[in-house]
Image (cartoon, rainbow, N blue to C red; front, top):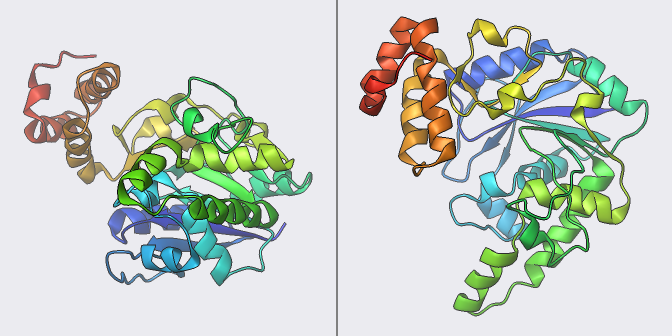
Length: 300
């Protein structure tokens, strides 16, 4: 397998530099590059880098929806630019900058390559009618599949087919402003439904990542914005997401809480943040200073 391993980010800072170095240590046989969003202006880095931007994608013919959030909503877009710059690879591995891997990427890709899989990711291939992205997908596909996108492996042949579908979907968008907005709101597909649905419709082979990573666990994938890079609990976890530098965690928790309404997910974030009280008192104090509402959280 000739794979290009990509760390996707919208910035280059101490966190991304640390994540890149760690990723390269787990991938000795494949080329590792930063895949950097420069939509809002060029960004310099001191590591091998490919870049993507909204303007470039618009010129290709892709629809940038939702405005200002398309890079998050359509994670596959970054891969199209990577392919155009480096079309020679058979597979493209994309890992988000806030995803910490703790397993050999080389061994992982060797297992995938031995059976020539086209899509590998967390939960790849699941089908649920009540999933938040399924309704939009039913307009385009008779069956809607899903996966999670913090780490994915996509073959070149599937990636090209996904690009063809995205371009065809973009051509179907109405021109009139109100109709256009309504069409996109109801029918534009998130990458986590779009890529596996293309694979399912076109007969490409996809598999859940746990088939290839010994000891894979989803437990830490559910811990929302309360993980930091140095946590000893992550030493034996194959993959954790999202993870930040320790010094950045208080502000990341604050940012998350500002955007979360009252409900189960907010309660989960508060509970997980509260667990820091017993494991790292200095960090807990910093978290409380940035998030006064957590001062009354009891010890977990």
